[in-house]
Length: 161
Image (cartoon, rainbow, N blue to C red; front, top):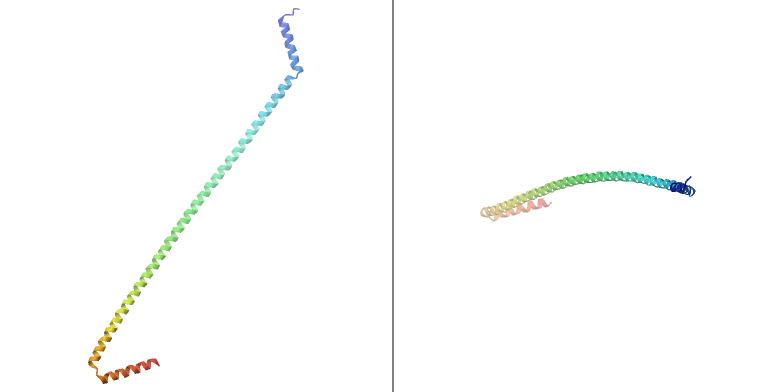
């Protein structure tokens, strides 16, 4: 049996394998691979949990956005209703103001007409009294004047009593 280089390489290989088996390198490798697999599995689970959380947050933010849009729409609708109510109220108040001002103007016109009629009547009465004085003065003598004076005094007494 010749011990050549191949034999020594084979013996060295067997010793290497024995040394590896003695130092439990395959167990350490398996343990390392298992730890790495477990770490990867934990990272995948964490990524899945984060993805679900992100989807939940996205759904929540979309719901909040829809709620905010609905609230904004209701605010806009309420503002439009309030604006139309204010417009109608302003229109009504304007119409009432115009009606009051028209009535006040008509009342002032009627008062002015009444004042003018009274002024014309007073002027007519003054004119009639002046004309009557002239006529009476022209036709009256002392006896007639005394009779008219006595008659006027008796009328005043009758009215005062």
